[in-house]
Amino acid sequence: MPTAIKRLLRTSPQQLRAFEATARLMSVTQAARELHVSQPTVSVQLRELATLVGEPLFEPVGRGIRLTPAGEALQSTVVDIAACWQRFEDRLSDLSGLLRGRLRIAAVTTAEYFVPDLLGPFAALHPGVDIDLAIENRDRVIARLHRQADDLAVMMLPPDDLPLQSLPFLDNPLVVLAPRSHPLAQSTQPITLERLSAERWLMREAGSGTRQVTEQHFADHGFAPRVAMSLGSNEALKHAVGAGLGLAVVSALTVEAGHAPSAPWVCLPVEGFPIQRQWSLVWRSDAPLAVPARQLLAYVQNAQRPALARQSA
Image 1 (cartoon, rainbow, N blue to C red):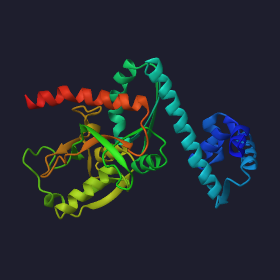
Image 2: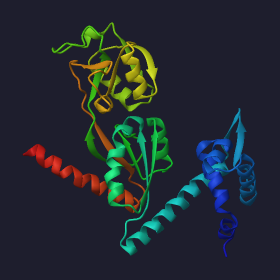
Image 3: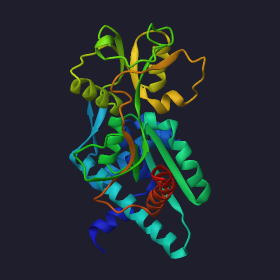
């Protein structure tokens, strides 16, 4: 039996799970918490795995850790092993004629307002599919795409540095939000950006897709906003606007969620708004898609056809 196979068979699933979680989270403590075991247990599993490999897998850096070259190679291998096993399970599902398996999806934070509504009917149709949904900021979703941690991602602006395919499936208009007490809150006439040049503007954090689109739109119109604050979530933005801290550009979907006449903010009719963008399902084109992911894409495409027919009627 080849030495490589012998080495693989000497590793345990617990060791590989401990390594995968630690490499992903860059923390033994967080890995232990996620795996519901003690920190010493994870440390022992990592030491035993390093002994089997014959190379250290992690090295200290500051107060944290980082992967060694051997650790990086093992992380890539573990991802490949998981993908191969997933393809095996998908093949078994094909042979049995049943849709089973695991669907792994990462979505940017704004998508949390509609992704459950997208997945709910699909899950009801396919009870044999287990769905793992991760809600992250855009930078972390891109990092997950790089390491192929998910089958699909939901985002507005896919990165350019990866081989990707995408399926646009939902409009994402961006609107200007203002406090209900703002002098222009009751305006029914278009408001120029120049008229808002003295306003305080609130933005999403750097790297956010909404912020990138907003900044590009402002630059295209020669407008330089006075950015007073950056916030890490849509809810924080809405609360800050409602408190009178400034104006913000947000997805209309986040405004509609839980919107009530008594909400402390309103949408301003600003010229050039709403900015029209779309949400897309995104996936790696250089790796085969799992059967549940292919089925979700077909489900979304089929759901779009009646809507397109109504629009063209």
